[in-house]
Each structure stands twice: as C-alpha cells, then as structure tokens.
Amino acid sequence: MAIHYECRRCTACCRWPGEVKVSDAEITALAQHLQLDEDAFIQQYTRVRFLRRGLALAEKAGGSCIFLEGRDCRVQPVKPQQCRDFPNGWQNRIFQDFCRAKSTTMDD
Image 1 (cartoon, rainbow, N blue to C red):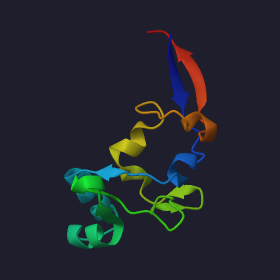
Image 2 (image 1 turned 135 degrees about the vertical axis):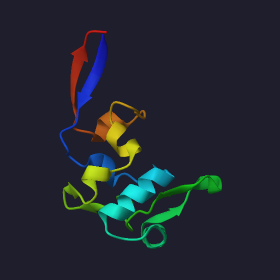
Image 3 (image 1 turned 30 degrees about the vertical axis):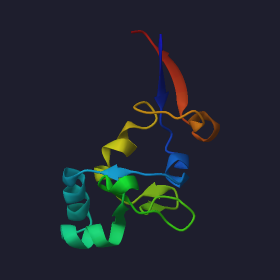
Image 4 (image 1 turned 90 degrees about the horizontal axis):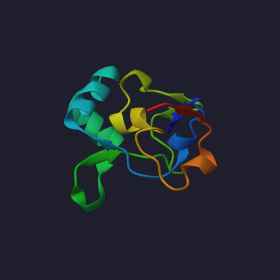
C-alpha cells in the first residue's frame, strides 16, 4: 500500500530555506498573476539557482518563501509545480518532522 499525504496548508514547507526552481512557463504565469512584466518579475522575485542552472524563487531574510504572507500563499492559484507536488511528489528525509500533512494509505 502506498502512503498519500493530505496537505493541511500549515505552510511549514514554505518556511524552509531551499530552492524552488521556476520554469519559463511558471515565470510567465506568476508575472501575469502579479500584473508585472516578466523582466520585472525576474528582477524582483527570483535569484540564480545553484551552479547557474536556471532561476529559483527568492527567499525572505529568514529563508521563507518570498510569497508567504502570514499563513497564506500570495500566488496560490499559480504556484510553481514544485510547490504543488509537495508533500506527495517529493519528500526529503526530515519533511515529516515539520510537515503537518495527514498520512493516509491508498491501495495501489
């Protein structure tokens, strides 16, 4: 049986420092959502990824996501695929220590 996690929108994953990569299509969607042109979005909200392998979302000083506002995501309707896939699409060895997603078992 596979384990599925139901996100409870605790925003713990949005508070971890890390790298949220963004594709060209995601940059377009995010910029449109924020009513910015793509160049302005890139300058204001992204940084160069490790080893210069594209762009990632910038972080706030404490490491949380630039789009986290309290317990809400400012770009929820167009958030990057990496964010949409968590916690089921990828998991690191410590995610369960912080993530409050409810685990359920699923038949394969």
